Length: 377
Image 1 (cartoon, rainbow, N blue to C red):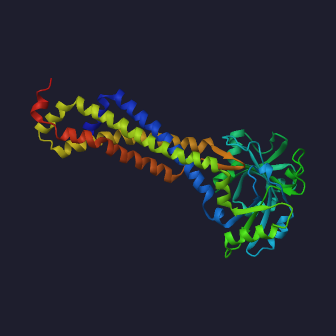
Image 2 (image 1 turned 180 degrees about the horizontal axis):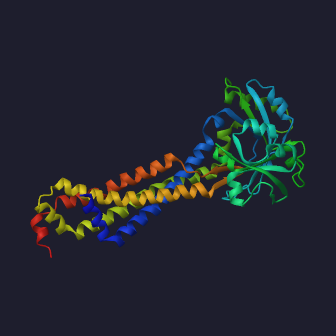
Image 3 (image 1 turned 180 degrees about the vertical axis):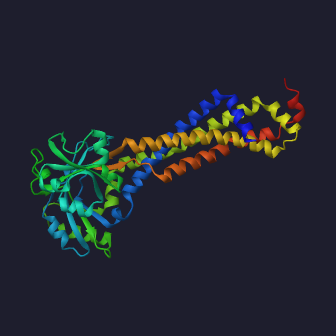
């Protein structure tokens, strides 16, 4: 009786359209919230987050306030368990939370190539390595700012020539701009000659990250600047602590969207059943069993929710794929990216909510008193 269900929905097409649209909007928001949570999880977990250390100036937060001697890298390399050290100079246009944050990372081009999972989609790596004011730009930044290879890009005191645009298997990397270390150190106004923002430490396979971090801080304690060394994931989570709290609160917004869909579809289905209570009595009179009447109502609510949920999820995935959205603070960025898991979650939630929303009206339709219902005008 699937055709019967579709005809029932089409008979009240205005109500059906409004319900589907409401469900789509709610699932669109749900998927965006889920994307932010996935982005934070990717940023603060994984092998890169656990097997790399960040050496930062103690009691400093914004990258512009951390000023470590570049030659600390030589002392760090002597610590047991350290495989390599990459000094990094960080510059950002905004240390506060922003949806259009621009973050420059200055480092040795050869170290960038060997340690970062970058793939140039266009441009030339040799130009970036040889030309001092050249930069390679993450795909998301290039998309937001309308940049392409050969363009001159200026922001604040920094002006670079785009030598290439790159993509990465790590979504947050696509929100960065890489330059040579010397370029950022000697840019007018930054006054960072011989200084770096942080040292990124790559560990050997058998090293204990927490033990190595303690040894690094102990080794540098006699230096001119005190340091605080943490795992990369823990460092980024601490850097984004305000956003982490905000994203945790947004988690409840996702639940609210699910509740909205449940309430909306349930209300529509109840109205539909009450309007056609006599019709269900007639169906039972001609031999439709109560369980089949329940299935008819459940099919109706599930179709409404699935169509709206799939539409909202699909729109969210499309927007996330082409929008290149990201939010960042203090030089760290969270990328919003679509994923198969997120699409599957949105579809599954739509299915479950559709069934749950139809349970009460389905019971009502299946237990309607036939004689009383047939007497209704």
